[in-house]
Length: 174
Figure 1 (cartoon, rainbow, N blue to C red):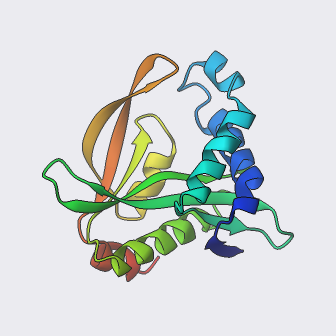
Figure 2 (figure 1 turned 180 degrees about the horizontal axis):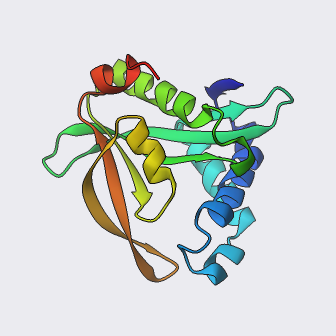
């Protein structure tokens, strides 16, 4: 498995992972009609725009060149105006989960944030998402909540926080 920076040419693979993982991870959590009507072309344009604007996406690529997961680290401001790292999206295709790919994507993202002098990181996930257990296993602490509107419906999201990613994440043995 290779973890690397995405290029504009990866937008199709990233979009495929996004659409497939939303339909599997959020089944029974998000309105089924919304999931069935995710617009593939719109999502592909969104990823192409992000990559064109020098947004950072790390992709996990299988031995045969298939993109099977991705993460999007970025620097944001917390409620107090301090910089922190945020992983706004991290997804791994269902059939590849449990192989350490998500951990590798978070590891690479955290390393990138540390190089930008960021010490604190948050990953947002819908409250009922099975990924909550994954984030806790990697040392994330559920510290924040917010409402996210998806398809006109409010859903509770939990922010899993690493207060010192250099100590809590990067050098932690798994």
